[in-house]
Image 1 (cartoon, rainbow, N blue to C red):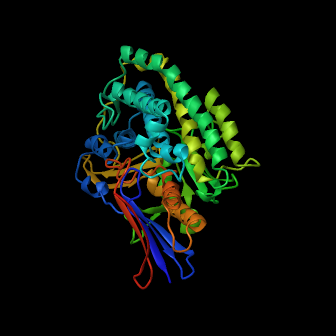
Image 2: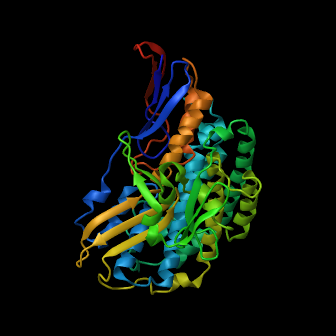
Image 3: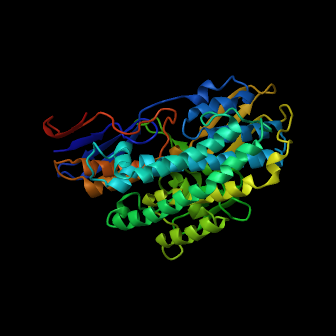
Length: 476
């Protein structure tokens, strides 16, 4: 008799979603779906506003990575103005973006996925959360929280607040970094490096402990997409788009971000509010691609900083024979490498005298009716596309969010995990948590401004086709 397993809500992610798993008459997985159950509508209600307002408005899309939308929106505004953003403003924007990468990746690794990775997938659900992690390893939890706090402090030092800073604007930024705050941040860097070094050692132990099941967490061929610098290095703020396949073959190189519509198409399904982008030249199935830390480390030729490059060389051994790393479980490792890279770049920028230059904004009016801004958010490549009239009033808005670009891969991962771990008429928390963790590896940001951390009430029932209750798990 066929049955449906429902996991609702999926916990320790940003936003609201559920997973349904359909079992066939033999208790084997027939199908699965990752449903995003919320709708926000920014693309519609921004129409009619001035493009000058968009950095402040779209930063409200996300409470975890508002800087991503702030910068992508400001870059779209730069294009509408038709100006060259002053070099000091670009340096300051990059600095804030690195601060965001640090705080967001630290949140994902230590606080959202840490309870699974450190306490274990089968740990008591009442303890498998941030409170349980603090009780089990207070030093590790404290260090992770401190690392995130450092990133937030950097954002706050530039934008006056760490959430929804009103700072980057079309043409540049509003203010530079005060010298005393720069010095305070420099003093904290040694402790931040130490935290990341310890986390990298811990991650390698985790990979050993999970070696028997890593291949179930999104291990499959796909394309990968991300920005790369002009020299092929790891890039988060500017650059060109690169797309590679799972063998490392380059399908697109040096593609202008403004040409994204030639590369990306967006499909829809009636069971999820999240769209399903794919690589347009290959179609919805063969065109599935992944973005984010794993993709960025796969598409770049090198990182470009000494410590991150050493780790990147070790990371690439998991791909084998010079091929990309295709297992999504390695997103965790990739995030730590990006934190290390960001700290090195932060150190470089804080020592650069360009930060004290006062030319931080270019002034102009509407010179183009289309603006496209692209940046690398913690979760992947982010596109803001605006069309305005001659007065700068928005006529159309298209936002392609990183999490959406991972949607096909997330659904495939859920099915892969369900096929490995769920069978028959019995459920247990450890198996279901593994399915949930298949979503956490991507660190999805669904609504971003509202998210669940820790313990939520959840009831899961296994019902037969005749309506019989076969099994039930309840969490109060």
